[in-house]
Length: 112
Image 1: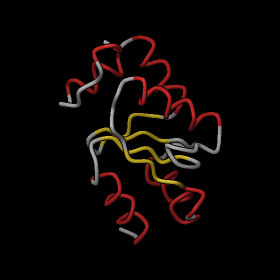
Image 2: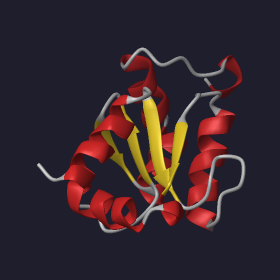
Image 3: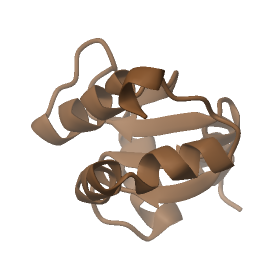
């Protein structure tokens, strides 16, 4: 395993929900990262944002690691969930809330 993969795995395991994104949860730097942030904030889910704009090795490495070409990328309990479109579709259908609940991650009652 390469050093960048080790760094990525360390990030993924650092919190239950991790988003590799452009910008930060407080200041997303692209619309897709912003949408994912809005969904998770609406659900009241604490998450860690990893700003890929600060580290080109992570930015390119995460795409190879997940075999997914776009950012943002969402991980729940170390498992890759998908990007913005998948997160949005899962949220709208209730699948995202179910996935979070099944993994022991509480969502706000307003979003249930």
